[in-house]
Length: 158
Ligand SMILES: [Fe+2]
Ligand SMILES: [Fe+2]
Image 1 (tube, rainbow, N blue to C red):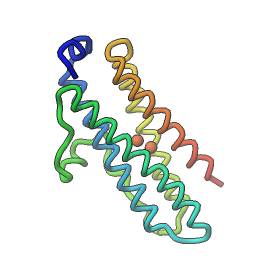
Image 2: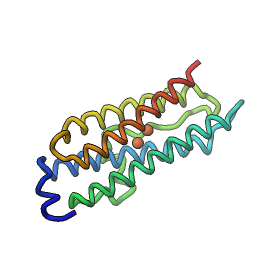
Image 3: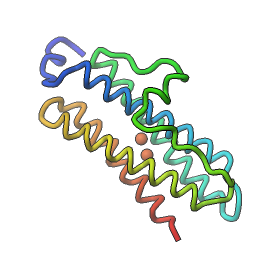
Image 4: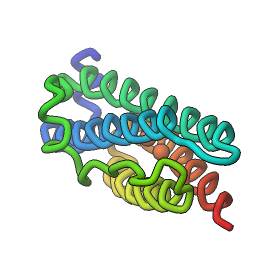
């Protein structure tokens, strides 16, 4: 990102980079939990649950990549140590199901974390609206996918 491009970002850059990095950490934690549950899930019809979890895990990993790209464009660097991802996140690690065939627990874990993600991106959208167009576009795009994730898992409830 060039000088002028950085100049038109009408927001405290350090603060924005920090917010984006927190979201970046959240995405890794979510990716890991969804991916892990996709590997471990058991029980009747587990293939469907596995497919849903793999789909959202893939999206979270993409979100992490998109956030990393934007952080670097803005002149920052995303968290570079695995051990610091939990400390740097907005929310604690979502965790995984205790009973591998407990779909209700999986749905609860996912919908709660997705609701948290929607809040994070909604705040970021409000913060960047009219101030940093590219980041605004990115966070609203990610928020749209988190909304889809929440809905996908809410629809799995009995
Ligand atoms: Fe995400
Ligand atoms: Fe998500």
